[in-house]
Amino acid sequence: MNGVIYPFMYLYLSGYRPSLRINHSEWKDETNWREAADQAMEFIGRGRDFDNETKEKIMDYYQNASPNGIYRSESDVYTGMMVWEVNSR
Image (cartoon, rainbow, N blue to C red):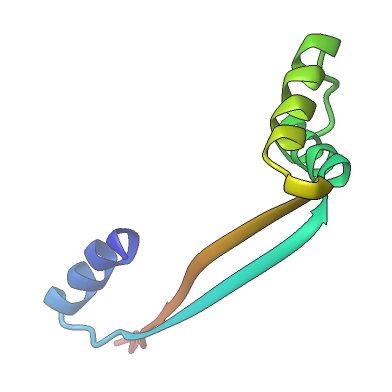
């Protein structure tokens, strides 16, 4: 919420009346720990390769955090959109 309050207040105090919509989503996911580790390395690495030591640390983390071999994750996400009208003079 902190990321939107300053632009909102700037517009409001400048005489605009922005419309603000906030959406809240909760996601729960269960996946094999190897797949979760691969996804994490792909996301973190963004196309670059990790050395074997780093890969091993990441794999160990996901394996240890996965009871019965299943990694569970939860995400609590807020997204927002702000629109306002500007009349040209």
